[in-house]
Image (cartoon, rainbow over all chains, first blue to last red; front, side):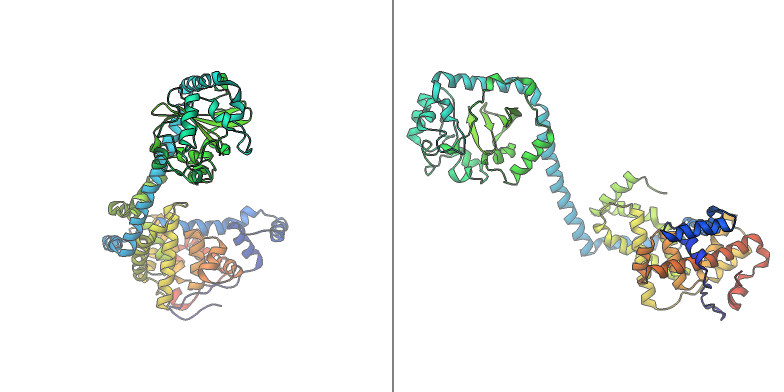
Length: 321
Length: 199
């Protein structure tokens, strides 16, 4: 349809199928059989598609070149000024504020993640110290002999940790342990294996997956279960021999696993509450830590600022100090 | 001047956080092109000024929702396109071709050839009915694909394809004629008298 009246817009004439296909081809919107037809048309016309496309490409480039035309200066400042005034509108201001809040939160998360990564990078440097501390702990255990295995048996087995096992790590500790009958962590210290701070460090509920607070770590819980009556609260594989750790085997697990552990811990998806708690390193002053893979089991050794050594397994935990 | 991507991203983030200077810098950088998009969509200078104003305000209002996954300029052109299309729908009237532009284009005085070429194209584009001009602008200036154009203009993709082809054919003849023999063309009279014959 063509408009012949003055000042009326022009509606271009219809084009044939070839022109339409060429136009679509120039836009990358031609597919299938039409492409074959077009190629055949070019052959029949004794020319090339490039030649056929030339006028269309010329129009396209001419049109896109108009984008580089400078705008009139007359309205420029007024336009910009009016647009900027929109920033004061409540809608824009609230969006900006929300974005700033979110950025702050994201930045905090990022910094936390970076701190975790830095800590893990330092692990190799402190691996020897960790192993030594672990060895000391084991050496402290060995004189008390034969019931270690029973003491550190499977978390899934009610029989794994007996009263004897609990007492066998340290006579004094066991006495205290039995006396207080409240702890859900295990101490291997010769002198004061079960301090008040450690007592009740993990309540029964916490062991079932609730994240622990600082208070929970530091305050005795008079309602905590009897250690001897709750052997499944402890899980240290029978064959764990910290003093025998090969440093080359340390940190055999990559950062991604570490991060996954952290993520799971932060999501409270781990069954071990200490693991979840330890993920928040600032709250308990983790000094350094290392992941250890031994006999197919994954352990995380964490040295606290007060030189306590935490050995974490999933889903259970044990505390050396 | 076009900002490098990293710098532009930083500016966007600052502007999103409420930094007025960053927002001003972003808008200044893209002002000419945003205006150019509006000019081609609206079809004349007067309406383009209004459309550009609306577009800039829409960009500021919408920047908080821009996710930085595409270039800011690409996003801004689309916002401008929508603003102008809204403006056209509101006005429900056909923009009047700019006689001044056509005159200047064909007299060719005080313009370099590149500028004159742009003015010729603009003048030719202005003569096209909205139904043909808008798909062409969205495709060749804004860079939308056929499905986007169909969605924006609420027409079937096949119609988009047809209208773009027809618009290009017409422009090709207009531009080609002008380039081949400028003296023969009398665009204003031709406009007033009707469409030049297509070969």
